[in-house]
Image 1 (spheres, rainbow, N blue to C red):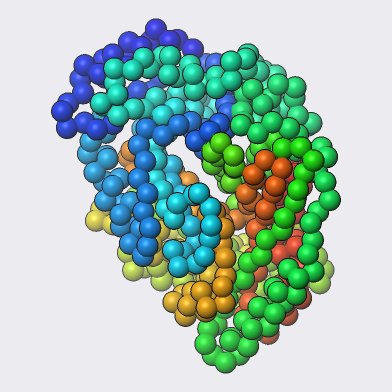
Image 2 (cartoon, rainbow, N blue to C red):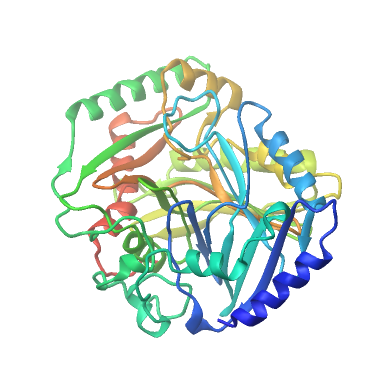
Length: 469
């Protein structure tokens, strides 16, 4: 790490900052050997394909709630962009996350919706590395080098060198191995010490959980038969308790290794972490090109064929809703005539990737508000389905079935629907899964589907080494 260069660029940014500037970001390239990645207090993580982002601290934060939460975030981000002093051709970014819906009950310190710029951002794109330091203009008298060093080394002990950190999750090549935890890894990554998969303890399984889900499932089938709705998505939780605190980095490492086509994500505070590996992209924007996944229909064994009538109908609801949402705001909307089969570990899904062009007067947040929640996670018609879920006491803790991703200073973004995820609180783990009900659905079969959807997180917690695709 060239700290002299970093200090020089920060001083230049301080000198050129204007009175209208609210936030400053300084970015410098890094050699791979210089990156210690961690998920610390107020940490966040995002990885998919050739991109990895790891953030620490919060230089700028805005939260919102209610039906107009996306409009509030949009206004705040637009104002930030006009007041953001950026001194590098590499655009810094903000993370964002949000819950399923403001009306659905959830209890967790995560806000309904939040957008934040990390103080320190480590980036890998196509095996090239950068570090970005951001701070409010009013705090520019701080020693940026000391602050960055402190965040890079949150625990005053040597971090693992990059060449030996294939066993500790890092944005580098060599993720093909997901081995047992490396001694000292907690010094490079996480507020949680301990080992995933070691002394995991017995799974907590309450029969009342199954009976409650089946009862709600029968109510959903009846509501569909009565014509109140066409589709409903019900969720449930699975609770674990471990003998030692979970090593969150190991979980993230294993999710990214086994499910490389998914988006691996995480956000942590002092006593908890919300992590997962989602197969569904809610919205990806590059320039004016929009990409949206229509993902629905699930199979996991011979008893649940992917091309069943039930799965086909589920998927058609989702694809049609995505097409209508994009058509309302975008131009050049295209949708493949037939869905692909996507294999994610032991699960397979039907998926169509829709594309469109974003007009200049439409924002990312406008699109998110129109696309989410989709029939894949809520139901259809959307309003009637949400009303039914509220009446039935549906709960979606944390940001489960909400969204998590990033938006950069140029306006590009990549937001995943927060699926295949869980909340880790030291030794307590809560996992989330759901299933879609349409006419003719069997509640017991849908319960079995939720069991199958717990597998990615259960595998990561068990720290098995087999690689999934």
